[in-house]
Amino acid sequence: MKKPVKVAITGAAGQIAYSLIFRVASGSMLGPDQPVILQLLDIPDSLEKLKGTVMEIEDCAFPLVSGVVATADPMEAFDGTDYGLLVGARPRGPGMERKDLLEANAKIFSVQGKALSEKASRDVKVLVVGNPANTNALITASNAKKLDPKQITAMVRLDHNRAISQLAAKTGTSGNDIDKVIIWGNHSATQYPDISHTTIAGKAAKSLVSQEWVEKDFIPTVQQRGAAIIKARGLSSAASAASAAVDHMRDWALGTNGKWVSMGIPSDGSYGIAPGVVYGYPVTCANGKYEIVQGLSVDEFSRARMSVTETELREERAAIEELLK
Ligand code: NAI
Image: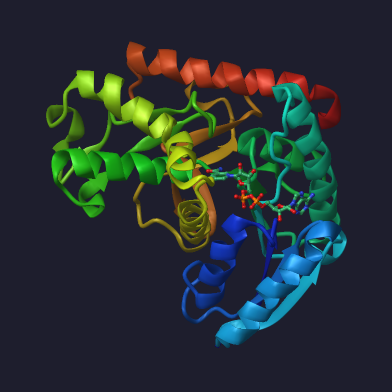
């Protein structure tokens, strides 16, 4: 057996964590031979509820769980952390404007960025799930001054997975047949699910579906899927969000064998996107690192959509600019 690694999960008493913790504990994220110490963080008011989740973790008797910490102190939760899954966030309350929401979250993620910077492993890999995920990742990175900003990523993998399943359903194929889907930009309704380079069982996706379907059906369905789930379930997506978080971290840590996945990462200016904003890009992962897929052609249709979602991210960044210093 390998030496245990520390996995911190924030928002640990919430609904995504209720699915995520058990997937991580069973080995879905880091493999069946990697023991984990779970470091669970929530706010003081949620600690009693978190106690119940910890009792259930105990009752699973997972062979891979070497320890569990439950705390409301980020410095304790991120102590020596190798993998940080930042799920907890402030939801939008009644009458709350977008700027208020950005600011409320900016405060949470500044504190957590500082704690990660002080306490986490120097090689920590961080995934921000809590919304607005891309800008929360930017704030975390700006406050984690002792870490490389590339260590802090945001989740667009749920959108990526949704795009694959919509395409599979439309073409009567399986997700396994589908390669090279891209989610550009923000995890929000402005995201751009792009199938320009996608292949389905080796054939160009664009030769199998109409442009009309892409524009009128596929793109809006993927963009609005979160809202559709809330309408149907009365609650936001939780199991699928947890599953996407597991996919994102597993691929980053263990590699994609050349397969493209989408990750929200700090822009280095690739594809003309403003440097610094945390933007969804196509990447491949190997040896614990991700690399942007370079050299793709971008037609006018794609460029317009990539710009819309970039503009939204620049506006989000502008709204919390003072907190980035
Ligand atoms: P939830 O409301 O069930 O749980 C959130 C938990 O976070 C609560 O237990 C709360 O006490 C905790 N929390 C709040 N502030 C915290 C802090 N400062 N430190 C630690 N914990 C804190 O919410 P749910 O459904 O689990 O969703 C969590 C977040 O994930 C939301 O922001 C949601 O919008 C986002 N999300 C992101 C997705 C993505 O694709 N990026 C997909 C689905 C949800």
